[in-house]
Image (tube, rainbow, N blue to C red; front, side, top):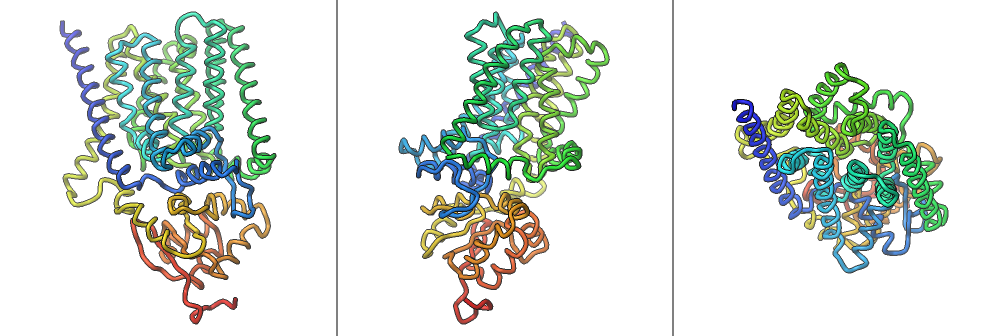
Length: 504
């Protein structure tokens, strides 16, 4: 009787935690959607690529008539966004529709996969609801990033192969989903490796081979389409941009950067991974062979290894933790079907703790500092992005915006697609930065919009090492003056000709 009561209490606690996560996420998303302040500069890159495509440009060249290109994003997400725009959907609404749908698909995939492996529907729904507790998941909703969409496709592919008889039709559907996941995000190839290893461990060697062949064929089709429709530009672009400045030393340090990002930016993921890895370690010590044949175990290991490797690339941010969060949630949820009551309780209460502790700390912070914004991003960007766009729209001439979404929303084409990648490319291509610096010296831009203050120590480091690179700050200061600071964006306009420090 007491065991039954304990089980019901655990489920109620998890349902309560999931409900709080959903409510908190809804408030967060509403705040950011009405202000558009979730449209950060990486999201702006995706928006700009969608706009380019609507104008017939698929992967703009590294430098060309419209300005600078350079990106390591795979195409599916911005292609779908461009399609929505072509169908008449406003560009920001299209971004929100895609991002919201992506996370809903991810939650649905987690739910269905748990049901497939034997977890009850009520419990699976509660477990899936905890996805919304993370900063990573909320970031995937408030801006157009491919992470949520790619992760959802991967999870749905695993769901297809996880239950029932695996016939040729289901293998083909799974291969298509794995291909689409990879076409949205390059690192999603771990889904194929994981699926093949699991099928082989189950003795389904023929099915594993068929899945591998069909998926790799799908990969090849995607690559051919990318090369053809970009007129071959994509080869040079990815040769220069794909690794993002990664090297062996940085890759070996990837796990440290992953933990650092989770600790400072997403406590939910940190707790989930710590608790999941602890439970996994105990399980492997008890029965390693049996454990390594379970899909949730292999998913957690694969996501952990892949995410750690991803953080070996400079510029990686908290959004890359989403795959790992989903894998940890699925693993902990799968403990609910273990024969041991202790394991079932551990799975449920681990999810409860990982969900409620970050929410509790956030609520405590709001109580102690009632006038403060809910998070650092809100503090920095209080306002409305439309206010910035309206100012930019009124200036004459082209606009250089660190966040290309601002230029797009102002009805213009971005001159620099990705300021972070620009800084990287100038280290590899001699003189790459000179056209931009010359345009600044000539004061060709009607406005320059930055996200940091270049006069502060942090701003100096940011622009010298992260965005645009050495010489940008000095050239800007010589030829432009600050007009206004709106919603965290610093708007600069050309100095009057008489005060020029640079001969034209």
